[in-house]
Image (cartoon, rainbow, N blue to C red):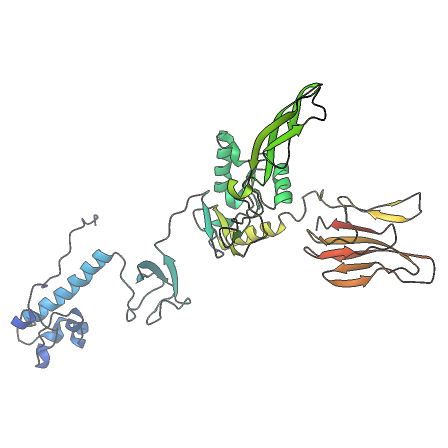
Length: 457
């Protein structure tokens, strides 16, 4: 059959009036109590409606009453017109649905489609996730490369957190291709940086807003954003606070002027105020007075001075980028999560693992262990460990003096044992975690505390 042309539907018998006997409940006349009605639900309420025309016959000519025929035709055309108008019918708790049925629900202006998950699906509420699977219609179509922000984590597999992950082509072929096209065009160079510069920025500031595209391996390094928005109270005496970046001028002077003396012309600058007066020691050879004029800056008036001192609260804000416009399969999502977990743990060739090296200090005979990138700490000062790692502790105790103590997160340990001898030296390693606060107290000379970051694991 050829495709039917869409024609505006009309409800048969919709103008008939029940009061005039123009339409009635199907099968009611055969029971001896004709029921005039225009209500579709009432028209089909009797068993006769299910049994068919024969159950409504009241004459030997095998014709049901014309009113009831009109009622049946109205019911059929009504349901057909409703379907044509709505497209997808609303959910009805008394209808039996199959595992291919689709219904809709409208709640607070949001239209949601539900797909039946079972045959014989009757009377099960749409909230039953074993029987129905929802799909929200009113979603905004997102395009690859768009940034999406949210104050709660999103589970859309087409989104990826801007966390600095390295994305391979594979599941992200469309996204990587899109970024590659931007890179190759040369028109968006400000969006990209080298891997080395990216790593330096993250190491220094914790964030980097650039992509890194590797044309050899066809990979894309995502930008890394902080997930905090800082807020504070604003008053006439308190500047707006941000994330530690100075966004205006601080207090100070910028002064420069001419100084005349017997040696020629020179520059005079600086001072407490914007104008300085210089008086010569002898009025016979030098000018009695010289001036330098310049600018005085006031940080409170010149811009926003942002720091962390007066932050009163912060809000988590998650930044995502659209990496796919269609939902990935479960296996692709699992692979993505595994790749994200492994990212940054160790290079493929393990070049970021750090070997230990031992050597002897010839002047003292002491044995020391050095690692690459060790950080020598100031004695008797707090230090916050930037990552998991270990501490190298060398403690020297002199008889009669206080034993040097190592403090980790407010818990204090003795580093040496008074043995009755003149000098007692202890050398050991201590494992520490990221954000641990450590300190070695002052003691005899040659105390040593070094932090070594844990890498390659």
